[in-house]
Image 1 (spheres, each protein chain N blue to C red):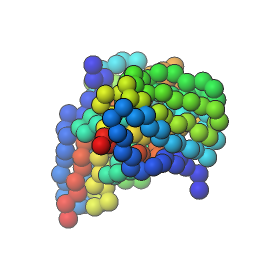
Image 2: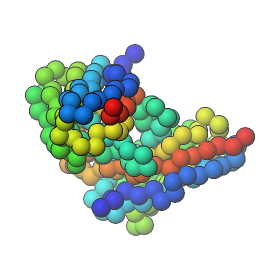
Image 3: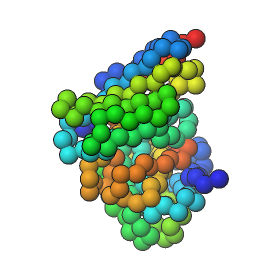
Image 4: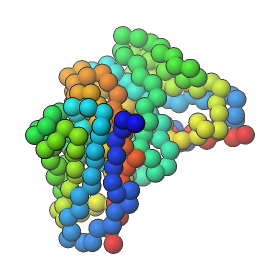
Length: 114
Length: 112
């Protein structure tokens, strides 16, 4: 079945450590996105990518980095510069950006600080 | 600046009755609106969308209404079922924009 796979489901980070969250899609979508969800809040956009080798900052990009070397993959690195990384991270994809098409989401990764 | 607002954090409805979830927006450039449903520890699932050229879109038990003059949309679920218990997010985008803007979510509980 086509879909979006995020791994791991749970991740723990030590202070000062970088961690990378994986996101893979087999929907043949051009656009991919990373969101962060905090309790009682909506989803906030961290980064998005329209196409391979291209990505743009979202609303809360500080402390995060991404890469898009393959169409199927859009990993997110939470760096030590992100001072409040504990959150639920969601990856999404859509056929393309700038289109009235829904985004489809993975099941998320919950990141916690040890 | 919260451009999309869901003012009710929670809603409780009896099974079989109608559930009405509300969403307000402030950006008049928004022209595409969506509703997502989310269970705990899972990603949101797309439910239904509506373009600003319409005022109603229906899909089975789910109907979305758009009132552009009031900058308001609502999701109606009829009849409500126990499996509908989840958090519902509304989202909006503007033509040419690169992102969806999400509301804070409303937790819907369907009581037997």
